[in-house]
Amino acid sequence: MTDQSGVTLAALDSLGSMGGLFSTTVLYALACGTAVGGGLALLAVAVRGLPAKPAHEKQKANERVSELVRFAGQRGSVAAGAGIVVLLLTRWAVAGLATAVLVFFWDKLFGGASEEKAAMRRVEALASWTESLRDTIAGAVGLEQAIPASARAAAPVLRPHLDALVDRLRSRTPLPDALQQLADEIDDASADIIVAALILNARLRGPGLRQVLGALAKSAREEVDMRQRVMAQRASTRRSVQIVVAVSIAFVLGLSIFNRDFVEPYGTAVGQLVLACVCGLFALGFWWLRKLSTIETPERFLVRDEAAVQFVRPRTPAASASGPAQSLPHPSPEEGVRR
Figure 1 (cartoon, rainbow, N blue to C red):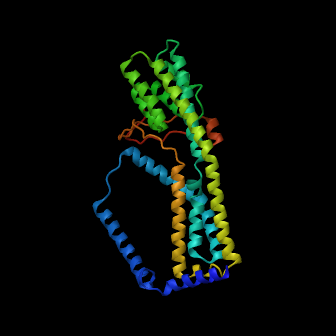
Figure 2 (spheres, rainbow, N blue to C red):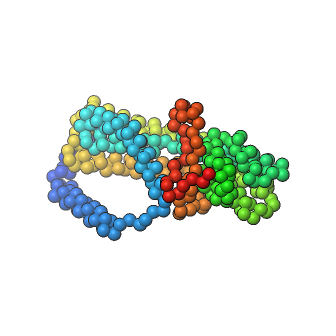
């Protein structure tokens, strides 16, 4: 073991004195070339400009930015603290930076269970609402009357969207337009299929809506069952990945603290470069595992480029006292509100 460690240390120490790719001149040249290329790319983007985005994409981008700011404020401090602790223990800048990045994106890389559960609850709520709508229509009730009746028994996930839909119908909004706005608010491919069937029936007034809603509800139930089976199978894999990551980090920290001589070559500039490559390979593997554990869902097809009229339900005193209620975005003066 001593002979092997001595050979490894000698090999790593000799990298700094080697010419070619590991020489200091080449590394400085690569860094300068990267900086100049990035500056030229930013200059080209600034001169040409970016294509104009539709209104709904701008709104989604603003929401993502606000969520990122909140996420950075909450988790950024924890990530910075963990990175500083690792930097003080190991005295490796790359290790501290990699630890901070790992802590910051921990939920993005090794989480996903909460997002999958939320998606399953949404699909299950859609299936329940579709069944309720089908049963209400069975009593010889029109679609305009069946929607408010079925909204009262809807799941909490869909209740705000269905309440807004009822408000639109009461304000004399055409049923196809109100349903289109409902699909935009839910923002789910499964909801688009159900809403598309309702829009077609609202425009054509043809028979067979009950059978269509029954088939769609059955399909939504089958999708929920499939996601539950997949999620149960991936739970053990996700836990195994977390254990591997924790053991790897603990092993590296243990070597850097209790056997400093064994990892001393990593304290040099070339050693830090090698450590950055190793961390990059680990990050690539984590990203690949995360991509494999993500359920691919179809893209939405009921998408509009124009901004729709927004509706806001008045907040009750009870809702104001309990805290900020979940409501729709406020309309702009140009759009107005139909009453």
